[in-house]
Image (cartoon, rainbow, N blue to C red; front, side, top):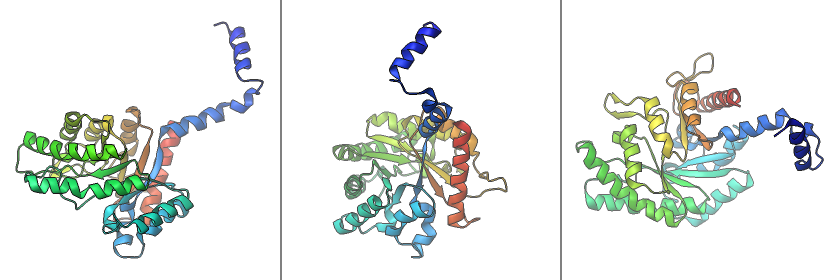
Length: 305
């Protein structure tokens, strides 16, 4: 198309709007929005919560007022007996709505192993997650995060088959509720990126996915899986991302994970959803750790916009 014709047709499409209204700052802000959004995982405040200095219900408002974050990821441990307490869930939903905070997912622990070799225990683990799936759907979450662990004494393939059996049945239940069941690299073979990506391929369901965590790649004892390789393998299936952090240097960089390298893997995968801050260290206070992680993520976002 010739330049003069292009300008003429563009002017027509703009309907008389002056070009400065859609200048570089507009496109820059759009580009920045498309990169990723930042959420806060409740585990970042686990010491405050376990010590009762912070109540689970107050976590929702704290995310917004203290950290300026408007999306949260719950951990079932902090309201473990409330999954079917409708009054309590109503309070959670009301507080989220009142503060303009989006509920993204519930991280589910201590409900059994979905890949347990004992069929009865595996069935029980699947059923134990039903109430959390229902609670997540009520809270307008998109997912529950589950564990696909099996028995490390079993073979690679046996653990894969067992986890696929339990997880696939849970996924079908979640699908009826229009939410996802996503698996985090969280110990055992689930921290092996190749194994977990194979599990995703084996189940092959639109409602199953991964939650790649930057740090959880300890398979067993002293056996570590390469974190960058692992996240790269899990990103094609990612429906959430966990930005694990432990310690920061004087430049504001995370000591254990090269965030710039890791976020390049995330962005190169085409991911533009929420990246959840999950501070787990003890070198900084929980509040400082969250702020430092947020600052680093925003810095990377600005560099890529």
